[in-house]
Length: 304
Image (cartoon, one colour):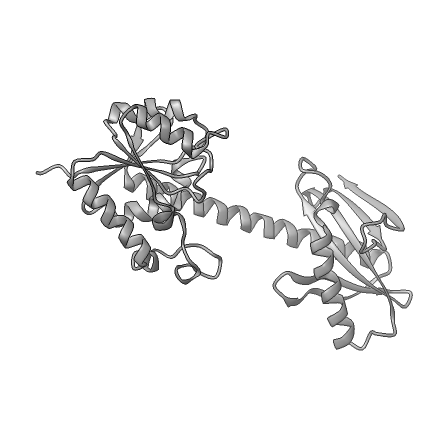
């Protein structure tokens, strides 16, 4: 069985240009294709492209910038989340031109390695797309910092596992957030609040977690829940941009529900959640849109 030509990739930017050279030489690579987004972005630790080109030239390795081919994916080939869609990418003219140039180079006898700006090769969507397109004709070898490599099949499996892990983490975060809102609603009812709405949504990014009434004052409550305070108090997640979205949603809510003549205030509840029997809840009353300190803070802790 005839052996397929080999095409290498490497995406770890935590390596200096000199180390990259010593990674490439054992595989007899004599051409580097750079698909990083910026021509002067570092291969690692601020090593500029000009310096990289100079070092490659010393070892008679050709340098080719390929950002226009592989580094940029226009909105036409992306989904609503901004992710490149394989079936659209492989039909894009700039992508096909890049593939043709690489094929021509391999035919001329060049041993090519494509580099990217990912910290880990197996996180590079560019390598996954390129490898998926080329694997029928070429043997894809994705290099690691130790000089070993893994196959295209392993690359695709790692990407799928990574995507699954991200989906699971997102699901867990949503579940924790939902639990935090349920605990907050229960706490507010115990304090004499009447819950009017849960997750009132104007549009993406403009949502009111809880709307409640007490003593003829309308309370719009933003709930932030975390499983630890490792990354700071959940309250800090309410930044100026978030507050702007909250104010927009409040304006629309008051208009739609005829509350324009009702006093209102913005509260927030920050929860460090370990379990339903072990959590701390901080209720920040009347927080200010301009970032000033709130009027009062009530702290409720449950440990059983």
